[in-house]
Length: 308
Ligand SMILES: Cc1cc2nc3c(=O)[nH]c(=O)nc-3n(C[C@H](O)[C@H](O)[C@H](O)COP(=O)(O)OP(=O)(O)OC[C@H]3O[C@@H](n4cnc5c(N)ncnc54)[C@H](O)[C@@H]3O)c2cc1C
Image (cartoon, rainbow, N blue to C red):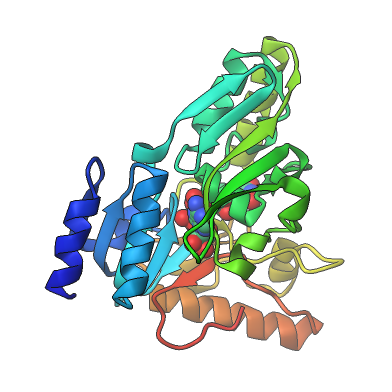
């Protein structure tokens, strides 16, 4: 990577940090992924804006990563820059029923703030292992709730370098989709509105959902959660199970025996193996049931276009 780029990056980053050849396996819940040329841990909206501006001006490709819980990064890694929105960019504030958080805040941290303030409505998200920015971008959801239900508005960085605030209704939020991916926006932070509730009830609901996850999901193995989106009229896990693919293995990658909707890293899986397994599952389900299985997991650093 160009010396010039690194020098200028150094001047922009005042509080954050950047690393060369950083293994992405450290930053994905799959525990898979080769090195990113440069990995920056950012700490402010202005830093993000300046870094993007610099990368664009020097034509350095860049990618946004939150907690890496919905990502498959290639074994070759990422040529260019990874901008990580994590702990260094994770302030959470509450004002009455409104919680405002920076994009790097974990959903777990926001859930604790909601619980401490006896606010209900965020319980569904407490066990999702993503960052707030990732959850807003993906319109993450579980157990009958989704980000769309609670979002008030979102602070975004546009590709033109402007910081704008969009109301939730203008975010084009639908099942695991938002305007963020269509417009190349970066989520900097957002506000959610919750409702007054009973602390004990909120805690019980969170505990109950955490138990349900532990019982049903293969949390003992690294994964990126549900591998596929729910095809209209079907359940991904049920289709995969009905196709006899539970336990189907390619190298270290496996269709979980506990929940067929999850591809897990059963031990030392490569991205190539996971991707091949995903393609095989798609092909078999297409042949057997005529249903297209669109991956929910997002692919980063693959040279050839991945069919979503
Ligand atoms: C065990 C397990 C259980 C899970 N359960 C659920 C569940 O119940 N429901 C659910 O919806 N998901 C679930 N997931 C998937 C995942 O946690 C969510 O999709 C989460 O919202 C992703 O957030 P992240 O910060 O990890 O995003 P990443 O994986 O880092 O990124 C995902 C995508 O969002 C983009 N992105 C991330 N941050 C930003 C930002 N600030 N601005 C713009 N783009 C951004 C990235 O570029 C990438 O394209 C689960 C995952 C695991 C491992």
